[in-house]
Image (cartoon, rainbow, N blue to C red; front, side, top):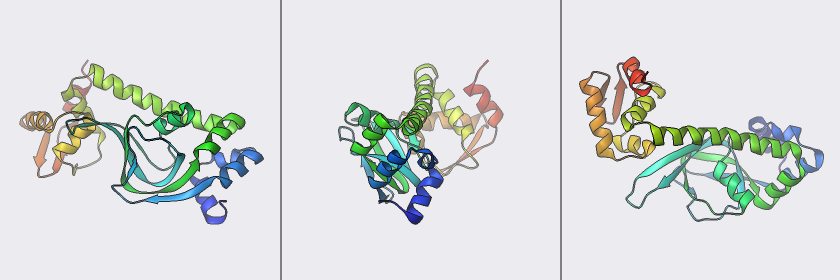
Length: 222
C-alpha cells in the first residue's frame, strides 16, 4: 500500500488522489505499485494485453504506429501527470494495444492494477471524471493529428512542426520523418527546399529556423 513519500509524489502529479471518496482512495493505494523503466524500454507492443493503468511522474513515453517498412507515425507522447488513451480504451474495452509504447526518457511512476482501475471507474465518480477528462483531452490531440494527416500537405505539416519546436533543433531527418509519418528522403528534400528559401539553416543533426514567419505562412495559408 502506498504511503509516505511515494503517496506525496503521486498526489503532487495527480491531484485526483486527494479528491477520491474514502473507499476509492483505499482501493487505489492498495493496488498501486511503483514502476521505473530505463530509456529504450518497450512499455507495450501492438497486440499485447493491458494489465495496468500508468500514472507517470517523470520521463516520457512515445506512442506510435510502426509500419512493415520500418516507418512510423507518432500518435502522442505521455509525460508526468498525463495518461495514455490507448491504455484507457484497452482497459475499458478489454482489448489489446493497437500501437507501440517506447520509453523516450527514463520513466518513473506508478501502475494501478487493471482490475482495480475497472472497479474505480465503476464505483468512483471522482475517478471516472478524472479518467474521462484525460481521455477527452488526448482525443482532441488525436483528432488534430488526423486532420493534419488527412488534409494538409507534408510541407505544411513540416513547416508547422518546425515552428513549434523551441530553439535550434538537434534532430535527424529520420527522427522528423518518424514524427510526421513520412520517409526520410522526402523530409530531406523538403528541408533542402526550405534552406534554399533561406527559411532554415541545415547543419549536421541540427536545424536552425531562420524565418519562422514564412514557415507559419506556409503552414497556415490564407
